[in-house]
Image (cartoon, rainbow, N blue to C red; front, side, top):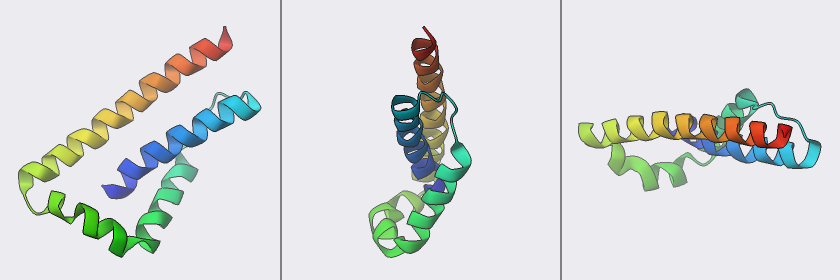
Length: 88
């Protein structure tokens, strides 16, 4: 869950940087997901200390799932708008 959530933000930053610097409008999620997994594994203690509370209660966990899905959808929508804007 943490990797997916972090991967969305890394993918968005990487995609926007790629669009601005190179003019490429592809959204590479695989590398972003790998980088997010690396960050979570290497920084596990730091990450877990700040997020453990979300995993203690089922409703908090459901909120994290909804946040991941919503932020992924929002990122894809924003990316679609950026691509359309950059093509104009």
